[in-house]
Length: 254
Image 1: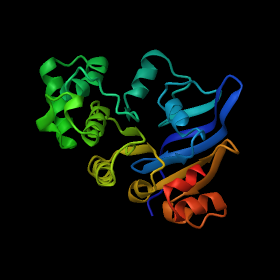
Image 2: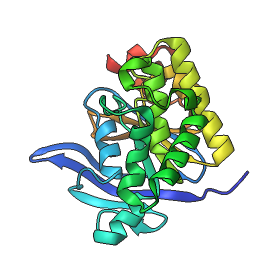
Image 3: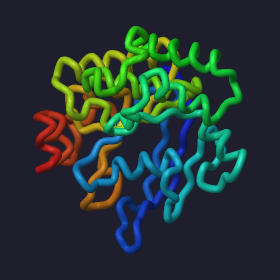
Image 4: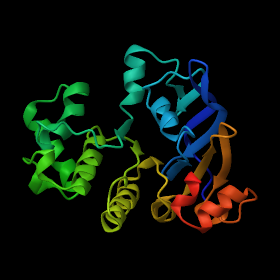
């Protein structure tokens, strides 16, 4: 077995808004090259954790280390250097409706590089090609399907050649066939590019399809109730966890 190689370390992370504590002093690691899933019911804090990990929110306490460098404490150029290591796909895709797919994918390059426009366009086309959308480069988001919009958002997350990609509910709102296609794309990118994925989802078929490891959050304890592979969590000592992995994704909201 290959020894663990943590690329992200989250230590004693507390996420709170005012007096409302969402998660309380949680710790976990994400290993290089794995597809790591954060799972939890509504209000458990899974998307909140992701937003802290990408620097949108500042934690109440704790450390978020990328290859040993703390995003929480970093500032200026040092912070930008850390953030260049990861790409993000938000739940809605967050594509700009007035811009073509190529222009959407090009945005991170415009923000973080000084490349000439021709080079940025070439890179953007290459990223669209990775997700099967090169021929749709000039289309607006409204002119393509929801699944294609998710693919375009993943292409944008890859624009800066990140080593880590964060995906927030990549299958949300998609039919089962399109969702399975997104899962296969994630696996292909992980295998072929050696990327590390951190995925927030509650879709059970996707979890079984893509996850190397899962942490499951419980809003009752404001912490992590289970950690392991999807198969191992079917036999969890926690009845709530066990029921979810043996039944359907609906059980997580019960």
